[in-house]
Length: 506
Ligand SMILES: *[C@@H]1O[C@H](CO)[C@@H](O)[C@H](O)[C@H]1NC(C)=O
Ligand SMILES: *[C@@H]1O[C@H](CO)[C@@H](O)[C@H](O)[C@H]1NC(C)=O
Ligand SMILES: *[C@@H]1O[C@H](CO)[C@@H](O)[C@H](O)[C@H]1NC(C)=O
Ligand SMILES: *[C@@H]1O[C@H](CO)[C@@H](O)[C@H](O)[C@H]1NC(C)=O
Ligand SMILES: *[C@@H]1O[C@H](CO)[C@@H](O)[C@H](O)[C@H]1NC(C)=O
Ligand SMILES: *[C@@H]1O[C@H](CO)[C@@H](O)[C@H](O)[C@H]1NC(C)=O
Ligand SMILES: *[C@@H]1O[C@H](CO)[C@@H](O)[C@H](O)[C@H]1NC(C)=O
Ligand SMILES: *[C@@H]1O[C@H](CO)[C@@H](O)[C@H](O)[C@H]1NC(C)=O
Image (tube, rainbow, N blue to C red; front, side):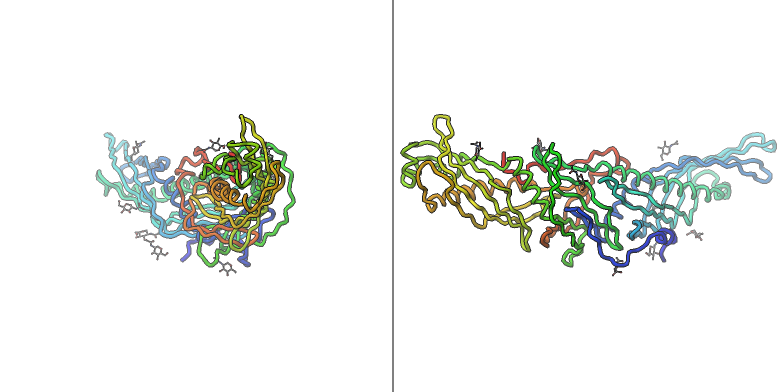
């Protein structure tokens, strides 16, 4: 039997019939919390809620009762404390107009102190007694309806409706001549029940207010490093369906301290909440335009540059090694060290495919000779690199791992005569495989983390490629960083460092 509180709350909830998630406008990074994820969130909230109720003290209750033949008896119940709450069953339901969370059949234990005193003309010597008592609350129902709205890029959590109903409460006195007072104390059942109801509803209101505050703390932008920021402003209102919640953030990289020049990217928002049949709690989808914007920002900032003056094969960066291959180089600069100045020559082209992310990177590799502390560029080779990037989950970050597919090199200019590219190829290959790709992977490994899921860890994640989207379907587990029962607000949100993603410079 569904509890009546649930009926009341659900009656305000208009359930969407399509069950299909309307795509969010504009957002290039979207998150879907599935029914499994909602269930997990609900359990977490109830757990946190109970933690905030335990040891909660209710206000003192006092009553004067007219006792026949005895006179006016004053009974005071004090130190009424909630000791424990056990929840039998709970549900979460979503509809277009909100999210309902309901707890039914909760039982609670409370303890209290009681004091009894009588004074009247009949009994000149005041009679008084005191003791302790336990209170058992049975079949308590608690429910609330909330909704989420976007207000200028920040999510607001609204409490639409809430309530608590205690169906059955019994008081058992301990100590003293308890049988004598039990009858008196029983008259308090009603006021203690409403006191419990009031305290719990008040806690709900506070709790939702704190959660809302937490959402206000979420940054609208994440500073990634000295070059870029990621816009994580929410776009559009969360879309609630009967089994999921979808949210979206802007998701574009912009140059730091730069007035954002809105780039016009083609938009395709046919995202689905499906995880290939797998029951997962959340799905985070990233549009390839996110990577494109990153590519553009770092390129425009001129930060895609790397100088290599050492390779695993140490001698390869010395002119002596090249005396037979490029005699002119050795003749002009005998036995000098060399370095490779690698500059990306146009924004890397990034595309999500059905298996991975394709990246085409155009670089100019300038060969410098180091002579008497001087850097002398002697030749420049253009290299087109084709690489594939597999997305992976590292902790709670989405990171990438690059693999060289192929490259082609051609001479751009030379001050040391014609270079046979066939002979240069091994140098390029070594530089790519031993330094450039590992370096890029080191940078990509730092990955991206999103404020809304920071504080949770991905578990058993799957990556799905659905061009132009790439998605991570995952279960999550709470790391306990966000809120420790009552200290929700005071807890500082920790953002993981996501510096230097996609960055080529040290
Ligand atoms: C959501 O609605 C769709 C369509 O009416 C239905 O098929 C689906 O079972 C519903 N899901 C839940 C969790 O109620
Ligand atoms: C209420 O009881 C607790 C222990 O259950 C005790 O620590 C506290 O001091 C009591 N408060 C009052 C006002 O008696
Ligand atoms: C209430 O107390 C009894 C006995 O101490 C215990 O068995 C029961 O689990 C408690 N119930 C709750 C809801 O804490
Ligand atoms: C718990 O809920 C189930 C139904 O969900 C019910 O059958 C059972 O009697 C309840 N138990 C208690 C102790 O209320
Ligand atoms: C309250 O619980 C007691 C003990 O379980 C039971 O005897 C009584 O009938 C219940 N009262 C109501 C109103 O449900
Ligand atoms: C971030 O995204 C929001 C929503 O799309 C937009 O209104 C805002 O102007 C963006 N901020 C910057 C700095 O680009
Ligand atoms: C690397 O080459 C670029 C031009 O291709 C140049 O602007 C830059 O100064 C060079 N860097 C070093 C450290 O030589
Ligand atoms: C994060 O990156 C910035 C800039 O690169 C650096 O100054 C800072 O120390 C890093 N913080 C952590 C915790 O690694």
